[in-house]
Image 1 (cartoon, rainbow, N blue to C red):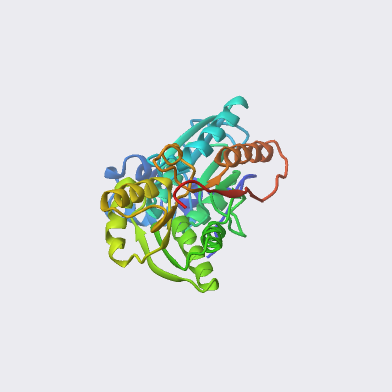
Image 2: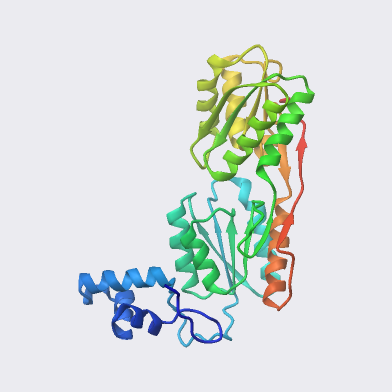
Length: 336
C-alpha cells in the first residue's frame, strides 16, 4: 500500500494518519499526547498506522515548512569511549560558528534505542541529523528518507549512504594491521574486538588478511560494546592459555589494548617479545601507557568538521559529495 503525501515537503500529516486509521485527527492527537483518553483498541490501531506511514509529529508550535530550528541532532553510541569525542567536538564547533546548536543523544549500540532517539529528535524538526555508523534497520532508513532533512553518517564506509557519509573502511583497518604484523614476521594472531558492527568489521578484515598471509588465528573474541580496560584484562586472561611463543594481538580500542597490556604485565607475559599489541583510536591513555601502545589513528576531528561542512552546504542548497573517506594510519610504538 502506498503512503499518501501532502504538501510541498512530502511529509505525512496527522490528517493522513487519521484517514488511514479511520478516526478523527483529534483522536490521533490524543493517542500521541493523552493516550489514556483513548481505548486500547483504537490506540493500537492508530499507533500501528503511525508506524506504517512513518508519521513524526511536529512539536514546534506553528511549525512551517520554511521555518529553520537552527538545531542539529547528533546521535552517537556512547561517550564512555574517547573514540567519538573528537568528531563530535569538531562537528559541534563548526556548526556553532555557523549559528547552529547541536543536541547530542546516545544510542548505546542499540538498534531500538537508535530508532526511538531518531523519532524523538525528529519531533523537534532539526535542520539536519548526524548518525554514527551506516547500518540501520529498515524502519530507521524509512524514517530518515521521510524526514526530508540532510543526514550525514560518520565512522563508516558504506557504498550506499542514506544521504551523505564521511568515514572510513573498518575492514581495511583490520587488514592493514594484519599486514603490519605480518611484515614483522608474525605467524600467530589473535583479536579482542568489541561486539558492535564496526569492531566486528575490523576483526573480520584482520582475520581475512591473516589467512591471505598464511597465518593462524588462535582467538578472535567478541567483547561487549562498549568495551573498556576491564574487558581487555579479562579478554587477555581468557586468551593467555592459547598464546604461543609469539602472538600478535589486535584490540578494538586503545582502552582494550591498555587493559591487555596491564594484564600481560600482571601475568608475566613479555610485551612485545611474546605478545605484540595494536590498539585503535590513538587515545591519550595509549600514548602515555608504559609501554606506549601501537595504534591505528583516524583523524576524527577532520571527520566531524567535514560532516558539519557538508550539512551546512546541503542546508544552503548546495550539493556536497555523497561519500568522503578520511585516511587512517598505523602509529608504531613500543608494544610491537
